[in-house]
Image (cartoon, rainbow, N blue to C red; front, side, top):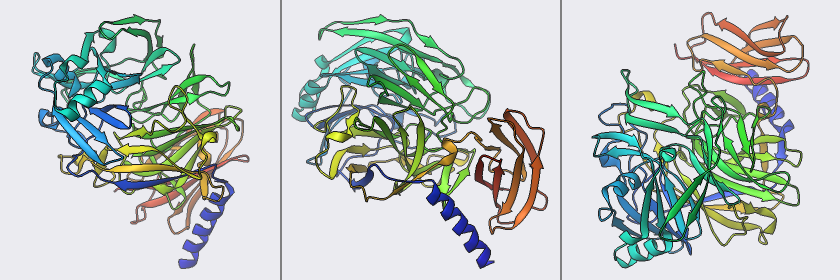
Length: 535
């Protein structure tokens, strides 16, 4: 038995080494804490001279399932928080002096935000509305004078004059992202969620995805905000996503862009997207040739660009995902658990994207709802993509990760009563290490392969469906192994179609261990995953 396990592990290690890459850089994270600062997740932030202004978000963890408790008022953050990470100081002030409309929006969760100069622009968000005695997605844009508010909070003086708000139905969005390409704002994805959250049946809400990239120009003289909406781009299939990661990019031609990575939910199944959407100043492109398996929900993301190699790197820190790595093997869990994976998605000069698992992980099931806050003195492009080639030191502090959800277990959604997770107060310093000997990043070969194997459901009770893609005509061999390496069955599938294929299987007398290894192999490609039984 031990020999079989050793042989299986040796095969796994060999296969990993074949698809490993000497890292173009590595990442180190260093925990730190600020005394008296509570936990927070899904907030908005701006910064000035190294100090952060943090607004809104939730003081609790994953939203509870009970409709009366989900997104309750007690979990609203109704304080302005100013943080100096260098001196590890913090200051707070209540927002009760602002108008009710401002208080409601600025204590909501999952707002979209973008800083331009001194002004932080905050759009939408989901929270409690007094007038309707219910929760809603706010249709507001609020402009915040960041330096003035930071100084006022520290000094304990009035800040009400430094907030301005307008109303616009196009801004009733939560769970999307607000970014810029050149001088144009892009409000990408998200949804309009009105009413009280209820996953228990008998919905007490309406939910409408924007399915859109809403573009607009904004002028602001410090008194009057003027918005000019531009034609929106709509795609009910590929832009039907929220709670994803939108990351500023430098495109292969050197222009600014945005990539929308993963998110939920696919129109035909309640699972994350695996593809991405690349957005430039005129249009968008869906990249179905790339599949992202790690880091599906919103988490902290570090964007880095190497001009010398024309490579765009995106580093994702933990969060929630449909897949995770276990001893070098991809594990699919359709319950979409909390994960600790740190992964890199790199776009090369030819435009090809690939995903790599880094040798470092988050220290716990952290990352969902956190933000990466860059150090502004690090060389950056106008869209906050960091200039990797401009680093002069081997090790560079590039920014911080703050907050997010801390979960006690991977899968808590179906048992969540509020005690299984909390808002994290943890900080991490994030360093980029450029030494060529820093380690190996493991390529997730399925992220660039064509098989795109998925198992439904997973975990399962032994009755499952395998879905895979063939890019050219061939037969496929499906092999099922126990976790010890014992082959349970092998089946050759013929007369397959180019494109999507489906194979259904029920395991007889399942192994009590509950874990199997499933492999699909064609003459030109191979994919392997773990499947988990929960009888």
